[in-house]
Amino acid sequence: MTATSTSTSTATEAYLRTLDTPAPAPVQAAEPMPRPVPTAAGPLAPDTDTDTDTETDTDTSAPGAPVEFTCREERLDISTEWHVLGTARLRKYVTTEQVERRVPVVRERVRVERVRVGDAERASLTEEEIAEAVEEVTVREERPVVRKYLAPIERVRLVVERFTEEELVRDELRRENVEIHDTTASATPAPSPTNGSMPLAPESTHSTSLRPMA
Image (cartoon, rainbow, N blue to C red):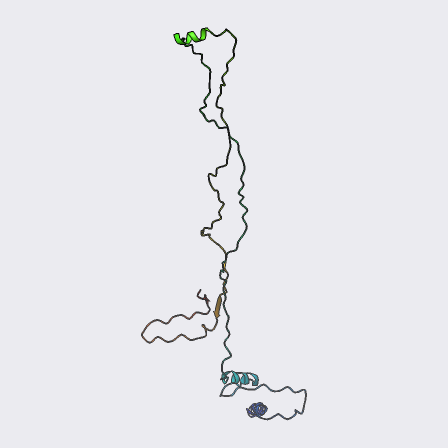
């Protein structure tokens, strides 16, 4: 029992000396370092873990700058522009048609009349010699004379007018959204109920989609 207690005390002192001051060079290079023996206060943690835990627990620096996204969306900017549909032509051409009109005309004609000679005229005509004679009259008639003249009847115009109507436009718009994945919700302890209500189960991961207002 004395030899065992002495060996244990020596190993503990060697380990504690290693934590506080550098240990002297061993006499034999081939002899391995003894493993630390746990004491009543509990096992000692390695140096690296102790330093890491201390730094993590005592880190009280301010949090980093917030990260953010700028969400954008596409919007329609509709305007109008002129396009040539074609041309309209106003052409004047001539047509011919047959017409008939009834026109009254006057014609002259010869009619023979025989008149009896009276007693006084008969005495004067008896003394004249018998001779040949020729008398003539001119017979005339009216004939239609056609003369053409131009008369305006109407004016034809080609007017370009505008009218407005609605046309349906369909297109697709893209929008940028933000999705949040929070993995710290499961590590946050749920608040204890104070009014006797049942505690709510924490969500391990939740996703939120933020949609900007138009």
